[in-house]
Amino acid sequence: MSHQHWTPLIKWNVSPNQIYFLDCCRSNIQVTKIINQDAERIICHAKGLIDENAKLTNKGAMILNEYETFIVKTKKKVASEVLGSDMNERINEYRNIWPSKRLPSGELARQSVTELKDKFVWFFKTYPEYDWDLILDATDEYNDLYEKKNYQYMVTSSYFIKKTNPQTKEVTSKLADCCQQILDELENQKNKA
Image (cartoon, rainbow, N blue to C red):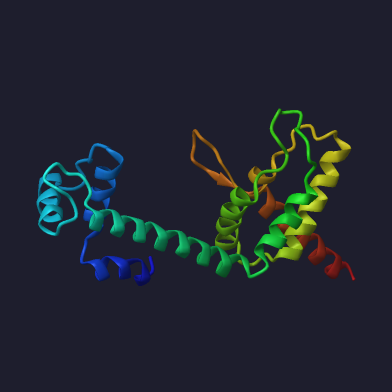
């Protein structure tokens, strides 16, 4: 985790536990036992972040809002750093390779840019050796193959990037497999030449 995540907490002199406690107060959620609720209540009240009824004060609400804004900006910055400055264009290019219809499974073939962006952040962190051109080529090949099969057993644009098995929690990427297949085929052609 980057030290930058701690900057807002240091600025406001609050701990992660206090942020969690304040968020629970705001959302009327029961505080779990991972923190000492009584201690955090006393500290937050002494700092003027909650009133005697554990309701957020204006200061407490402002700190939570600023922290959320910081987290959202950080997430966007990470996406931009990982995916590149042209990420939205590239994600749309990827998305448009997929058919704009339902697959035989009943699922939509294309997912939203936001969902795909999160999946691509994971993908590029996990497989930094693959670039956008290879990804688009692999996606084209996959779609061409399944178009010939009337899209039977085709996965969605999101699951192609990353899919987690709900039982085993195993994470797989058909996209990574297809990218590697293309690289292996190119290597085999070089070796034959």
